[in-house]
Every structure is written in C-alpha cells, then in structure tokens.
Image 1 (cartoon, helix red, strand yellow):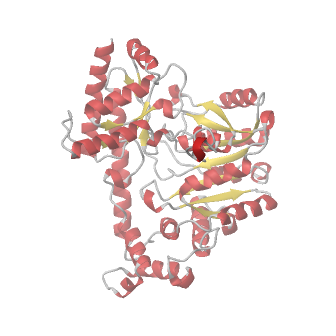
Image 2 (cartoon, rainbow, N blue to C red; image 1 turned 30 degrees about the vertical axis):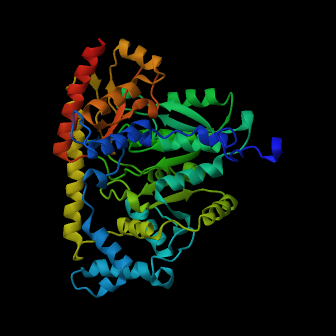
Image 3 (spheres, rainbow, N blue to C red; image 1 turned 180 degrees about the vertical axis):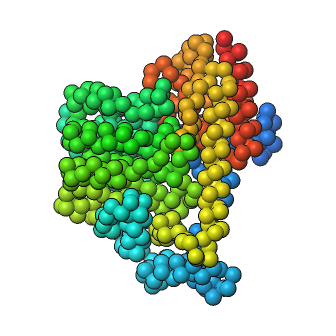
Length: 489
C-alpha cells in the first residue's frame, strides 16, 4: 500500500520483458517495415499528400488476385453454389459445377459449408487429393489417410515443425533451410525455439543446390544442435529455380544417409516456365528410386490453392501428404490438428476443385483450360520480361526465372551507401528498398529478409503485376538504380 492509502499504478501483466521471448525473435520480411511504410504512403496519397508518383505498386508478396490476376470461373461458380445452395436451381450454372457442389455439400455436416469438418479434412476431398497425386505421379499409390487438409501450406509446414522440435542446448532440434529462404521457415523456427541451419544455394548456377554445401552445413551444425530435418522449396521462393530430377535424387540420398526428415514445399508445382525445366515431385522420385529409399525416408510434402494458376490466397486452402511416418507419431499429428478443429471448409472445397477440375467432355472443360493456359502463359511471358529488363540495367543481375512467381536479382550497392546504411543500423538493401519506395512508390522486399551470402545484396519482387504495369515498375527500378548509384558513387 502506498502513502495515504493510495495504491500505486497497476503495471501491465504482459510487457516486452514478460512476454514469450521466442516471439520477439520472429521476423517476417514479406510484411515487414517496408510494407508497413507502403501502407502509410497509400493513406497519404488518399489524403492528398504530394508524392513523386501517383500510386504504390506492391510487388512484395505473391498475392495474385491483389495484383489483378482473374479468378478461374469454374472455381468461383462451384464456391458460389456451395455458399448459397439455392443457386443450384439456377439454370445459368453449368451442370458439372452443380455436380461438384452437390458432392461437396453432401460431405458437409447439415449439407452446409458453415459446419465443422473432420479435423483431418472432408473425407471426399482427401480422396480426390489422393487421386490427383496418383495421376500426377504416374500411378504411384496414395492413401487418403496420409492426406491432411490444411489452412494453406503454411499451416501444414508449421504443424510438421512442431512435431519435429524437441531438446535443449546441444540437443535442440536443428532444421536445414535454404538461403535465400522463404521467411515462414525462419519465423516458425524462431517461435518454436529450434535451431536454423543455413545451407546456401549457388547463385552462379541459377540458385542450384549443392550436396557438398549440404554436407558442410550439416557437419557444422552438429557441433551445437541435433539436425533432424531438411526443407526444400521447389520451384524456389524467392529464387525461382526448378530443381532437376538428379538434384532431387541426391537430396533424397543425403536425407537417407544422414537420417533427416524431408519436407518438400511444392506449392509452385504448376509454375514452371523455362525451356528444359520440369517439375518432379519428391514423392514420385522417392518411389522410383526403389524400396531402399521409398520404405525408409520420412517425407512430408505440401501444396496450396494460393499459387500456380489459381492464386486463391484468401481462401487458405492446402494439403500435406505424409510418407513413412511412425504410426504413433501420426496419431499425435491427428491429435494436434484436432486442437484447431478443422481447416476453413471453403478452402477445403476449393482444394477439391483444384485436384478435381473439369475433364474433357464436361461443359466447363474448354473454358477452364482456356483460362488456366492463358494465366500460365502470361506468367511465363512476365518471367522472361522481368529477367531481360533487369539484366539490361548496369549493376543488376538476375538469374533466369525458371518457375514460381518471383525474381531475386543481385544489386551492386556503392560503398558510400553501405556505410550510410550501417550508420543508420540498417542492412544496405533495406536502405536501397526503402529509398526506392519513397521515391518511386514501388514496394519490394530486401534480400536481407530472406538471407543471402555475406557481401551480396538482392531484392525480391513478384512477377504478378499486369504486363503494362510490370513494364512501368521495371522502368522505374532501372531509373532509380541509376540515380541511387550516381548519388552514392
């Protein structure tokens, strides 16, 4: 009790000093300080504040529909029918859309998407996912009971990491991730208190993987943690490379030899553009390598409705398939997903449409294929345009965008700018990207948010803006880089 019987001011129960310390270590560059500033600038423009540009062009995140990509008609028709079943009586909807909607609704409690589903996901959707995987992989069997529907691929990835992380001190779980990496991985590992083990992709050979580098990284990590898993993103984010079959085989042998759990992030599997490149699923390669590997290597692979030609990020649909998981651990996985009740049912319905799309002879097939092909063709054209225009800028070099939705060009930053950034306590490419935003309205993410070799600087940008806007963006990048270089040279 304070003087005169007056209680002292009550402090907060939750403060920076008393909160979970691992949360403070979490960083997520894709929606970091530059993006927050971009939102502020948009508000300023609406309020009439004068800027040297009329709009903010957000090329920081793979949000296709926000960038103007149009949704696939068939998907939205079925989702509309599922959301408002009265429309099943409307003759403007094609019969194959209605049949998909009826099948999904019949699998929902009370024939409503507003009901919870089973925690592992709607049974018929998991069956359709298994059928899709079998067709994709040339007939290799897929058990629907090994399919877990997820809230986007991110949810499945974080769930698997939760199962893997244990130990303290030198026995703490280490997880190998590629550098550059997608910040979901570093953020999740920080939150879970795991050890991030970096292995570097080779920029000189189009961001390829190198087994010698994997071995170096692993042996170094074993001095201070217990490496238990390796994560692969194929096609790559942020680097846009597509792994060769030979590379995938080498990774599988490495995982088998070193007893590592293998996590394959394959959400961009339809986004392959470069001649001579082809998507190979880790599961297909694993089983074609024979029982020595297919009976032993533990694998979780992930897919999503958010990328490819769909771009339906907001529905948060996805799945993971598990291979060779211990049966008792699998029971724990099912328990863990049960805590969150179920993934969003509209996202599950959308996932079903991705894996059970219109077939030849159905009324929606021709238009579906037309829209799908057009979307992927435009993305391929923009991938080529991006690398060509960036490589024409002195001081910028961009590896071929073989797949996915991003370029990760290397930029030359003058020494004077590097010193200024360090004086401000910033990474040099953060200074570069923040200056670009303030001067041009272009929102990119500095390479330091994804990891990069010391002494190199990059930025990540999506190839998603409409072609004409993408040309404007790239022209502005060119002009800015020239001004920035001249100012600091």
